[in-house]
Image (cartoon, rainbow over all chains, first blue to last red; front, top):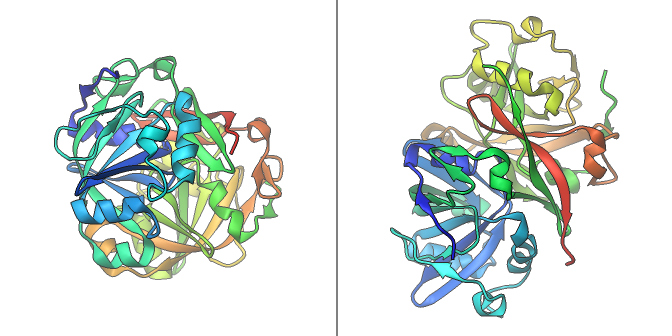
Length: 187
Length: 187
């Protein structure tokens, strides 16, 4: 199972700042689900907030609306096929965790699980904004706990080359870019 | 100067889907400015919409509020230093275009300019949502025209290895990741 260490909340935006595709886990009233989301971003530093698009036709949408919580899981390139798979099927038709043998770890604050094998995890509590949720499928949330695999992110920084693993950035049609080499600019 | 070709609007999200850092250009009432934004994402496919965070303390904020328009410019890794520079100074203190010798091309629909040398450009018209603008500095917009350098993106697809150039993904402290190699999953 993944080893994970807490990420201090003012640094949590760095897990998402480079725009990786995420998997959104959610749980409510005995049901649990996992979907992919290419459309998420940080929204604030402290307290850290995020924005994510959760389509109205997904099972996840009901679980997030019911619980007011979700987890953004940052998958590795080894999980690219899984990321496509859980983004293609509906949790109404299949138990994705059983279907794909997805192992989970408990979150600390929210009920939604953390997906084993990811690079990082952000536990989120929805900031209710009914108008933009209904109009744009856009959810805003506060990050209430954050975790990372210490082999890839520690002390508030990504390790060189993300510790030899890589986050992924969805394009379309099953195609991603991996996160590439570092570029440093003198400030 | 950049060669650019139109991107059909239903494919415009692909310019932003992998989460690159952008530069936001804006113009209003004789003033023009350019700032960087790590926090932007697609919000819908058709009509294409985007979300972007524009801090209330920036000059850009006033220009966007005044004009209801902006351009998201997708910079290349050669522009990483420029992206940090225009994200660090305020347009109230310096004419960033003169200071950095930034050349521009006219947009087709909006007044804000396109920054020469970028990989892609999205002309955007703000969808007024005063509550989330005021509360979260979050702006939603419709993409009303989109362009790409045909050496990097054509026929609705990124070229292999982005044509040998690379978009960039900001982390913090002057550090970016470049967009890396493609990963393809059988769908």
